[in-house]
Image 1 (tube, rainbow, N blue to C red):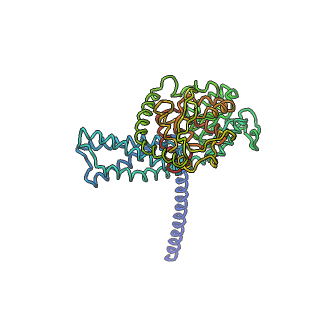
Image 2 (cartoon, rainbow, N blue to C red; image 1 turned 90 degrees about the vertical axis):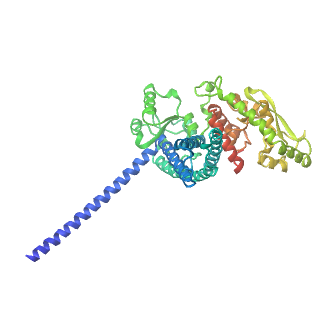
Length: 503
């Protein structure tokens, strides 16, 4: 009986171990499945345009409140006079921070926040936010000194907020990239437009797959060894959420049936983003493809330049004030530069040239001379090459530091130029481009500027092809003419001057 009981107990223990092992295996399997499900759910969340922005904003608010509150408490300044006044000061600074980061794309899922370029822009934006918030807070403190926070608390809070806010942006960006990599863009089209788009996409930083589909029949992508599938077009539309992060229309609108257009409109408003080629280029690459331009392009809706723009007058006031102050502030270094040019290279000191202004009105631009004067026998070259022998040694340094453009502040003061706008082209260059580049004259809808969107995004042009590439950015500036874009250009200009990138 004892033996029997021992056998029974042993068998029970064996069965129990088997049950535990099975249960453990099932539990492990369930854990793995739940982990996979969680990761899948996370990827689906990060494919939405709004999800990263909401998370960035939430973490910005949480981080700033925690950092500023903790430092204030440790410095025994947790409250100025009352909790309400402390809250008002805290929220004022937070609003300025959010606005500054919004300007540099700090809430845009398409911004690659892991690059050196964005890191510099993030830093510059928060430096600007610190200056603006300090100005507002201490101006208000002149009326109520109980609301005046310690300068050390404000400065230390911003210093700590910079690496913290940048760190979680880089971390979240990795999830966005991973989530996007699991999906593809569904491109409708297989003709010449689709071919050009594919080439531009391959040259960009985008890493998502492209899947081409033809709405009529299967045919090879023009000039490429890639087929556009037409057999499962309806099924692809039905499975958008699982396989695709957006639809790109790379065909002329005349090829789409009314039924298909209606379905795409419903898809845009109910399920996922549907891009035209122009909207994709503008959203992801921030320039306008020349293929999308036609004679009535400026008549489309969304142009801030149409009729009377309040920002136009505000910008002119800003140009007038800043150029006046800059002419006074930079008068001593300008005089010193003029003396150096005179002593080293002789006269003339100032270079002047006819340029094309707004509405194609010509004006004379002024710069410090950086090149040797061209002799009458020397063939004329409208481009300044990077290895141009005409460049003077002092002139190279002036160009590198952008000091040769100081006299253009006089053009800004007179209203012939703006601080920000497309590059003022030489009249001979403009005449040449008008003949070769369709719709080149659209860039003259705004005043030329000392710096601009094309200048900070594309290197100095040395050919007609470069002029076409820069026109794409100039047209983007014209279409999105706004305070936000001008602020982005200012920050990118500072970055360009510090790190020597761009023009």
